[in-house]
Length: 102
Image (cartoon, rainbow, N blue to C red):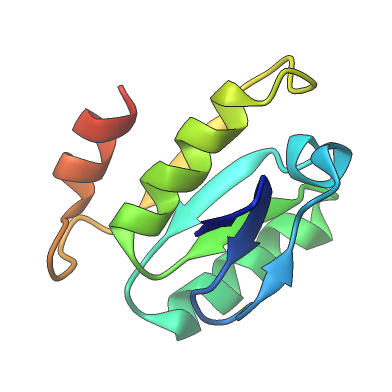
């Protein structure tokens, strides 16, 4: 969700994180999207154990919005290195998510 040039991740498990500082958003290497917050928690922990940060979402449309906002930020010189998504999610499945960000 975007509010006055701020990016806020409003999905579980990180409800309401404020990434208004562009460098905070640019430091995220992996985009995770799964409608099951438990799966996100496990994947995020596995990545953190390897020193990899992630932006986590349980709603596909929020993940695509984040992806687009990151591309639009002038201070971001790179996109996510990896997108991990569930294929079977309500409203927007993983295939549609990949189509949207492609």
